[in-house]
Image (cartoon, rainbow, N blue to C red; front, side, top):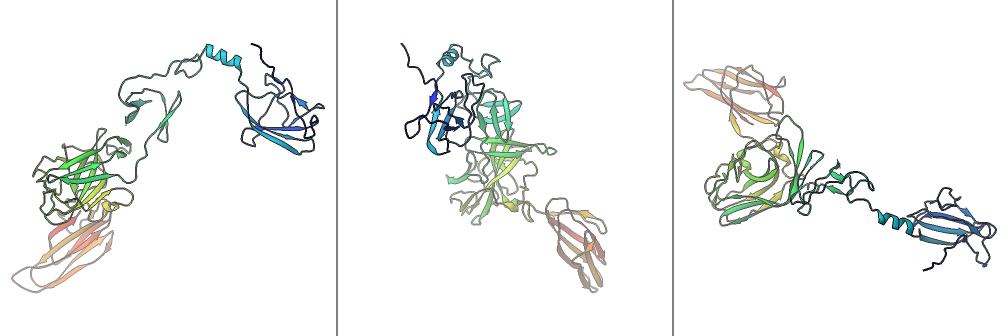
Length: 423
């Protein structure tokens, strides 16, 4: 079938109906004011001036770049705008189209008809590794995809096109806590968590994707060291068990260090009456030396400790400013009896302020003094006097020891009878 010939030369007429002699056609990328070149020849070798200047017949050779869309603005020779036409599309090149369809590039190739296929293994599973970098528990339509690519700013870009971006870690974790049949169930909702390395000498961070809720149950009869009719605060921990995230709980009153700067070991919850200590971390299965994150806490008051019948009064996912006091005085610390001699320098290496409680005793009469020296300065001298008697006279007091501070004791007419530290 014959076809109508296209316009061999572009001819523009003015508002008076006569050829627009010396007229100007400005050419832009469609929808913009960014100049886009046209050409004098079909091969696109010689660009027109922009604007294109019409000849004495109002004509010009105007060839368009392939796969481009233009905006034309037509002006008179005196620079008076006549009209603008946008979204002028390039005509379909049927010869190129037919040629390309006759020899399409292979699926997955990085360049037409060249190179090897990108490997796509259609088996069930998850994305496992990319350039030896493990992506944990990231499911893509229940299909394992093995592909090469690069990871930049938590985004995996595939060489064959497309990308995957890691779900950002929420600042505050979503948790639930409920009571039923006298048991307490705590659940962490799907999220992502970054954990420190299980090797304390490494600063490497590993990211874990929690794709489904994880829970821990405190059985009926297990108290976690709580007291009947007294409000308790129970901390919820996420454990990194070799890539699998598990939950654990601990009573904050037990003095467990929860600063996330070390590793933690747990005891199996074990059923009724098996989880009764405030100083023990409990999980469904006992674990040893795992990296952990504090993800929430629960305030709970039960009429009978171990009978979880009343819903928690507060459920708080941790993040932002919640529980930032974990590194403060009194959190994760217990009173510990220590041995301290006079005129010996001791150091607070716990990473938190500690409280030194010291008691001195003397027999006879006179004055007695305990002078604590912190970082070379005598502070809060503890002094007393005593008279002859058949018994001993005691003095004592508390001293706050800052982080990394050194201290020593000077004793006059007395000996140390007891030293304890809240540490």
